[in-house]
Image (cartoon, rainbow over all chains, first blue to last red; front, side, top):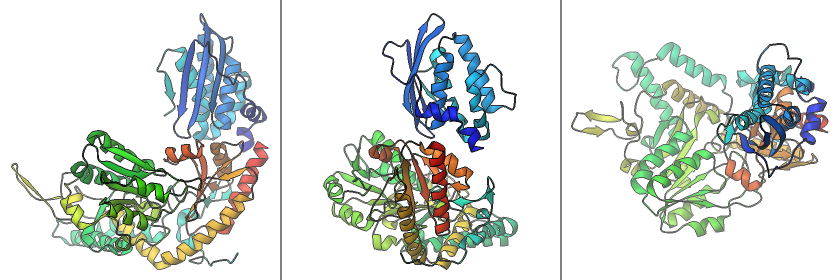
Length: 145
Length: 409
């Protein structure tokens, strides 16, 4: 079970997160916070019309939240807003429902093990909630509570 | 190291919940600072109330009401003796330590704190001993002062004393820190505060299951405890207050039991302690708490303290051997708590892996964000002991941490 949670890809991204830097010329900067564990991240999105041209993040969190943010940035870079939101929905279904995993999840499928750890679902979804806020003009800071 | 005998042979046998497997491993419960488990004796007392005696108190003339009232008031006497209060009227039943603090903030605080007055707390307080005072200070334009701590997590007594002045109208300190385990020198703190004319509130939530507390010897003005952190049920706690102060305080909530007579023109408040116990109280919880006191007395807090002291020393020694592990809170006077961070691994991941090994710990900021911020960590992993824990439990923790290292390399 633990091996299902801490897969190699997740451990790799938690130790060496991709797109892990500030972005001074970002179109949007949104903060996400999980008050339960103190995980905090700042997400930077550069929009080009409807396309996520560039995306990065900084912050401190557990392996699951860091890896999730890292893989999310890789996944949505170059995608349209709509595609990014669809991906978020697929990801959310993967973590919270019994539905068979979508074959469009790509690398994100490594998070399927999180479903067995309900207390950790919020860790995996923090970055995505923050992205949704950045893409939908919602409040400036996002909390998973 | 000499081994102090367990205060009660196979004490864990008294606690039904401890006899189970979690994720296929025997449960090792090391989250006692969050809440303690309940012995069969407490469960029986509460069951007895609901199955045999259930009735409201202080008003019925029938047999059941008399029994319920008697058991409820007996619990108050047990608590009085447990804390060595001078008078049973000084024992007020509340929901827990948090409500006790709020009660004093709302009643004593609102009556006596004025603009420019100061309330002094410490840097290691739980949010429940910070926020009620912040609310009060905001309302009254008073000032909240924070006494600093050192790298071990000990209160700097010189600095504490310097912060006392004629504007200090209340001092509120934690007896044992839930995040660090530090035991504060509350008798000395009280003497210092009294020299400056300030009454002292002690948050004893983390203390009473681990050491003898004597409110007369401490000479504190208020003392708070939570039943569920001393083997009793949730939803019941105690505010001790010196009668002279309680008598001068306005009521906290209005309702039944806290009045002598009501007309639409004027209401006369009841005497202590009922003035502060509006509404039907948590009768079963109170009776359960009384049984928890009996249980603790049966074992003896002296023996509990001696045993836990050694268990904590053993745990400290074992954890210090782990490379990359840093203990947060290394006070010379310490009880129950082993709070730590591991290099390169977030506490949340540590907690999940330990859980799969059957080891229950707490991870996070432990509702004490300011003190963790002071130590420069957003969260810790916290193992907290009770007298039913053993060296084997510590060994299971250490083995679980080896597993953490295995996964995170």
